[in-house]
Image (cartoon, rainbow, N blue to C red):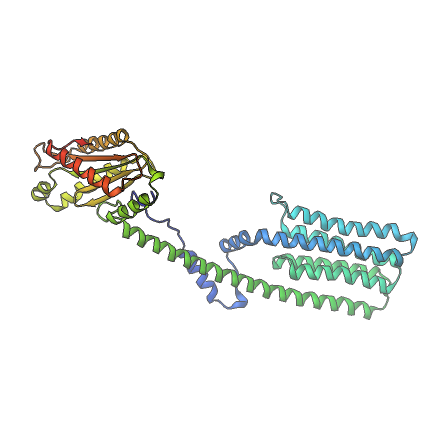
Length: 405
């Protein structure tokens, strides 16, 4: 209820530069789309948590699949080599489980790509060793293929920057080539064919990943632009709403705002009891306008409004320009004594201004006030306002520059 009592405006966001930057990026050719550092950071901040969770889930699934494969190796691998095989499978599953655990720790500082690349490289090395332990060309190629497939899936579906995916692919191809040289394959043509096949496959995945990143960036830019437009529309609507409820001269809420707040209080009076209403009127204001002009009269109104605004104590206090030289102050949960203290402070503050008023006997601006208080829910704000108006009339009749209750 207090958001407009002092003429507060909506929150302002410095977004035009970002909006223009996004429009420029969306106008570029799609294949050349790259996010600048500020938008890259925003993109990462927005997607970091969900990407970590997806990568952690993928790591756990790889660990489970590897554990299932291990069961079949019990019947495939010779008994003498089985302990080494189980140890290598344990190394693979363990590395992925550790990576998944670290990804789920928000305070862990290691970069996400390290937690993806490391278990993948461990898998490639372990797959090559498993193939060598099998002493079979088919088994050798089978293990290396399973290892490289895991790498392919990581590059395509786990969120990695393109340069990190290139590093992972290059390291994997290097490990593949080294194991192929030491493996049971002795035909150079077959060796070249296998390496070339995986290299071409890797290059295709790199291009697909690059295109995927570009489309993800474009979707991010479109979404961000829409959010900025909605935020700007909301800000302008708030500005219009603020203008509709604010007196432009004094920059305090107007009569319309006061009436709506009065309706709110009347709907649930018990929440605001005791309720006090103070009505203020600038003494001899017409004479000030006649002798000094309307510009000085407007300045006087702004000065008095500043004094009134400075006297507000609680967030629920409602100040409004009621009309002409009159101001109204509604004080929820304030008894008569408290309201009288507030009104006297305002009267003293206006008096301390010593603002000239040749039309007054004192020679400077003073203010009179009337107060009405209710401790029961059966007295609407309008009735309190009428009582405060009667008290203000008595203050005027008694010589002005005073507070009556």
